[in-house]
Image (cartoon, rainbow, N blue to C red; front, side):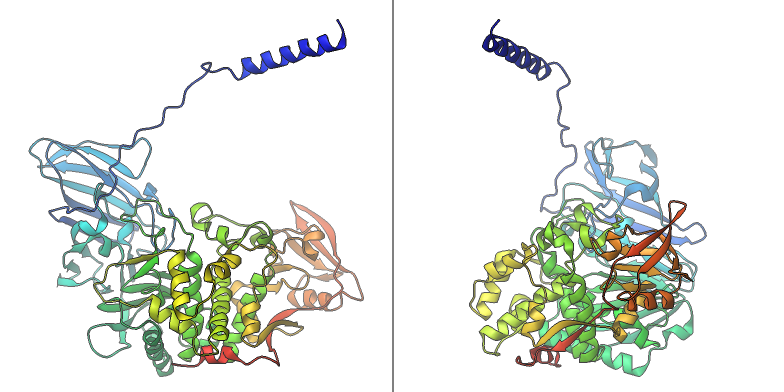
Length: 635
């Protein structure tokens, strides 16, 4: 056999083998599951759901729920437990919390079965002649939702509702039983109360899910506005009566904050707004937005020890802004008719990023930050975002997908993996947008003009208005003509070529680094419980010596450091903050050697770094006007 014939024979053998391997019909065939859960439709539901929640079992931290749900006799009804939360923008709820589900009709048990594909769906075969089913279950609360002195009622974790309707079409009348002696706050309208039992006026499921209840034994309501329509109040619950005392200067700032918010956004999208503030010895825990209320977790000392609350002074502002930016106007791909319909998050740089921007600006206009303090806060964010190596592979347009697959997942390499940068980077982006508006209009227009147009038309009963990318561009173009699609697209899709500090520079300030931290930087270290050397050797470390974060491809990274290792010694000295800072200061003249403990073994790591301590701050650009001061001035 010649070489060519041998080649053909070998090729035939290979192709034959491949055909045998890839042959059709030799294994299972995928059968796509058929949809068993009705899709939501915008039509009337008819009768109302009676909804009763007992929140008195604080010993076991268990809510008990009873519902009477109208059904169609003789037909299958599917009950849904919510999966998606508005504020988390992702599938953050779990039916794991639901237990003890029993269903009856006319006093007799009715069977149910969980959907094969969707564990949040329960199918009920309704007997003939039955028009109402009685549902009972428990929600295992855990955490601090149920305590003897403070109760938080998250309706979205306590309800089952029928599939096939928009949430706004389902009437519901809620009753809540609280432990005796608690004062309740909520944006819901109370019809009557009987001791510790609250009967709320009939509303729809969409409104109920957006109207949590906060109740406390030590509670106070502070009015922030005069009048009834559009009134705003600060509703406080705390572990001690003394924590409810808010200094007059803080109340004055909050009242000024409401004035400044209305000056930007105009008419309010709520009849009344409740700032539901829970004061805790565990420190500040963030906020959750709703259209007529917000939930904010604040340190017990929040209002008394104002300097130490630097990172949370604008939290209330951020959440109130969401009444307009997020609830009255929301991205089209983030709006859903029920909490069991998936959403997308392509516009979180507007929803969260612009709210974060306005939180900073409005808190400063109200006096909660001085302009100098706000600049120091911006320096921290500017440095953090500018130093994101992860942008090389993951632009902001992908970071906004965080809720879909990273929600509450650990991220050990934060600056490389990227996680929720749309908050801080959103601040930088909207600063750049404001600078662009001012330059192209000769200083006549800024971001306020955009907000007045984009959020116009709000009324307490106005339905949510959705928007898309083109609507943002169109409104900006109405303020100042420009190719805004190219401007915005160039930012959110950019990689390493993007200069995220451009807005600051055009406002007359540049990011710089010095060897002394600002008060704001020290406050951020204290809040995180770390020594932050991100901009020198590239790590943060807790007081125990445990490394919290390591900058991707920075000096510590190249020395073999990773999050979770413990620094035992710095040179010949026992680990301590002072010893580490001194070693970094002297790194240019003596090697920086760390002994670390990793995986049960100790070893030395030499960090090659020839600089000194570096901390971010802003400094003036001498040849540009300070338009940042103009942006931050009260309206």
